[in-house]
Every structure is written in structure tokens, then in C-alpha cells.
Length: 171
Image (cartoon, rainbow, N blue to C red; front, side, top):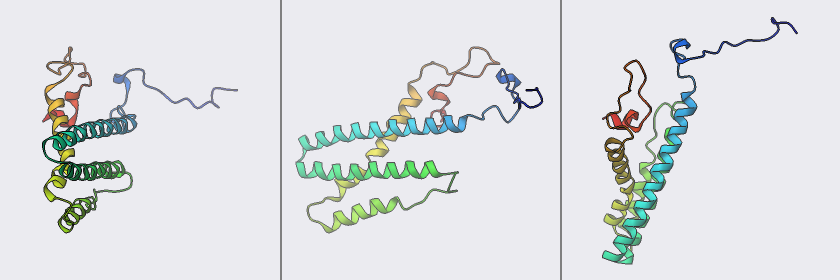
């Protein structure tokens, strides 16, 4: 076996040795991992918030209104799941997000307007539970972080990856 038969791929030893434009060749997997982690976190927060609100509405109003809320919240979770699947395919298979997810809300409202047992307002507010989840997430990312300033110790050093470096946290 000679050295000319082996394929030697140069590997940069440090971040400084990497060629410009190739520093972040692994973030595709890393960013998808971050996406799945964010989706899981939003889903858990939505389900917990749905449970708390469902029980509160049941205690404060009635079982019927609470079930209407729960129906809307389930539609909101389904909408969030459809949105996540759409975002996951964005870039690989599609160039833009589809708008067919809104048919879910329109269908729920039409169904609620046709049936006497369903009420539009609790269903609509239940659907918006995922929006409350997004607000909770943004507020948490904006105000609660690991480091108080989010700045690096050395000016030449990259800042540590915290939630402040997240695109939603920089607003």
C-alpha cells in the first residue's frame, strides 16, 4: 500500500484553519436538530397550557364550554404540527409555505356555526392556544438567559451559544 493510493482529506484543526464559507458545514444537521428541539418544546408547552386552561374553564364555566375549548385547542395543536411539517420541507422540497393549514380553522368555525352544541368563541380561543405558547417562548427567551449580557469574554472569541443568539431572542 503506497501513500498515493490513500485518499487524504485535509481536516482543519481549529476554526481559524477552516476556509471561509466552510466553517459551518455541519449546522444543517445541527439546525434541524435545533428545529426539532424547538418543535418539541413548543408542543409540550402547548399541551400543558391546554390542560391548565381546559381545567380552569371547566371549573369556571361548564363542561360544554371546556370541551369546545379543548376541540379548538386540539385543532391548534394539529395546526402547529402541520406548520412544523411544512417548515421541515421548506428548502428541500418546497420554496414557500402552503396556506392549506388555514382550512382547518375555517372548517372548525363553519362546523361550530352549523351545530348548536358547538360555540365559536371557545373553539377559536382554543385554537389560539398555540399563539399563547409562542408568546411564552419569546418572553422566556428574551428575558431569561444563562449569561446576563450574552457577550463573549474575549472580543476575538465567538459568544457562547445561548438562547440570546437565537433569531427570536435578538429582537
